Length: 286
Ligand SMILES: O=C[C@H](O)[C@@H](O)CC(=O)C(=O)O
Ligand SMILES: [Zn+2]
Image (cartoon, rainbow, N blue to C red):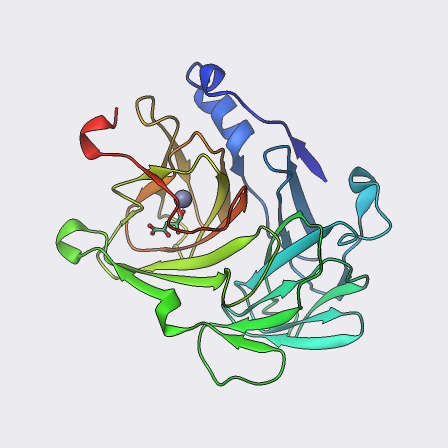
């Protein structure tokens, strides 16, 4: 598992492009036949990717010093690849594109598999420390409710922005209080409408939570200029398809693409109140 330390905004403003990318950008998350994990000291979030060409078992690794991965953790997973299965303590869950899971603390045996190795599943993983077990569920953006399956509620699909402002998008909240309970993880997906390229502008910070973005549904040659830093000391990171970026609490997190894209956001920290944001006024951005 790769380890990243926390960074100070006082240092960050002196970083070169290379250093900025080393600290915050996460590349090569989806390597065929591998589970790749990046552990950050920021709220001890783990960002990962699993691409099962053959079935893959999730293990704790030496870094966690735990008997199994979720001994003291919880995790959210969203499949951004072909259809696949997640097996949790012997129970198999089918996950199609953009379907996901919340897996509660204490689940011992977790394995990932693809329906078709030629078009493997790509499981995007966010995990955070946990102190209590909440129910493990399959999460679908659409469909019909059944035992162990949560369908995202209409009120958790929030349409925002306008094409005139190049930021028409739908924020689809998967894991949050009142829908899928967790200790601290809040997770979802935002899809931009064709022709809209800006996310999260006007932007915000949230001193109570950190956040990770994974950009996807981008053609090879498309980029997103991801903006980070304190509101009056912004920097950009050039990002490509299926790359993630860590935003410490002091940092804005917004992006502008060369065309529309989709991204998964995951937040952990002090509270789970989605709207608890420190909004930045446009006139204060520098
Ligand atoms: O704290 C919340 C997160 O930054 C995202 O949910 C914002 C987002 O998806 C958007 O505005 O498009
Ligand atoms: Zn945010």
